[in-house]
Length: 476
Ligand code: LLP
Image 1 (cartoon, rainbow, N blue to C red):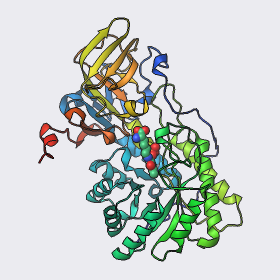
Image 2: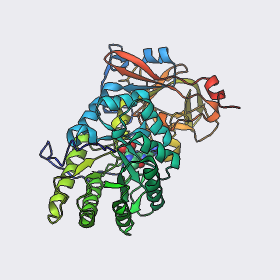
Image 3: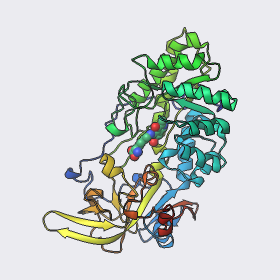
Image 4: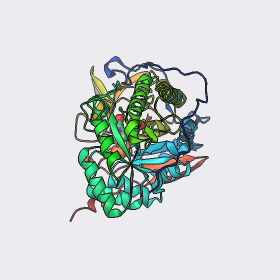
């Protein structure tokens, strides 16, 4: 059984300054208050990194016209800036080493994305049999796969062990017992991380807060269960305790929460080191770095996240000098959203417009909660723009509605929009690269959109648009 190798032991920060900031919570503006920058065009920071605006004022991503893409592939359409994802992957890798950056495939995955992650040398987090299967089908090196899941089935565990995944993150006492049984039957000694709830407040939406005592994930640090779980894994001759893992939540702006989580991991590892006899080598901080969805948001950059977390780990490791950890430890992270969210937009076509005098204007588009559940589920807020006139002011207000049979199917409430948006126009939402397509559904039998990757003037379809035949294919 191999595991990701120690490519990047505890490293010094590549930049000197080390701000640990308590950035404000990442929730977006209150729609009732209107946009942060009324009437202004969309902030270019919210557009994919490799974009430009052509002579007519229209958006190009990776050198390709968004309007042309909408014509070729239809709408709704997810357009990803492939080079942008690669640049962000390298920015993380600079801090932790590529192999210690484990992309959380739940944020967005398909064969092309898994191949990209492979080409960049990152590791891959899978949390279900389906995600594991996709990784294996794409030929991803199993030694760089990290298996997560709070309720792994026997089949999922067996498949992962037989494939030789690099790390299994255990989440319950029962799972430890089952892992021992399956390891014996497969004839392997899996490398295991124990998932710890560090009890750190992430300051994000309740549904995506995971590091507190009351969580369905992992073992509590404060109540001693994490230590017990580590002892159980360490005692077993059939498992190798490779280290510990924590994931405090998602869309987190508060760097000090990550720093605190890193300290807890070191405290726990140092405490356990006495009986684990230097067995542990991995401290995995999970994912969670937030991104800007709005002009007013101020998410930490990858570099600020890197410097803060690496410094926090190093300081904590040096702090408790009487433990044997220093120097042997690999720091791992699991970014999902922060790798892909800023690199995509979703393009829709306006189907109908309804004015309710004195109340609201509804601009209805050809997608909705089936391609972006986040507004309905987390009250997530997005910015809207017309990709054919990106720099146009947005002096009007309208609610962008989906086509589903729910009043709650509103993609953006009370959005700032350009003047005179008309039926047949394109409108786009920015920063939709994470948890958009991956949480898409077929509600109302709406086929899921196509996804296209764009780079250096070339475009390629990476997920084709579903058809009605696709929707009918499961009926018996
Ligand atoms: N590692 C573990 C163990 C996780 O559970 C997650 C996300 C990640 C890494 C990646 O976190 P990220 O870097 O993407 O924040 N559907 C929600 C987000 C759910 C996150 C679930 N776990 C949303 O749309 O906001």
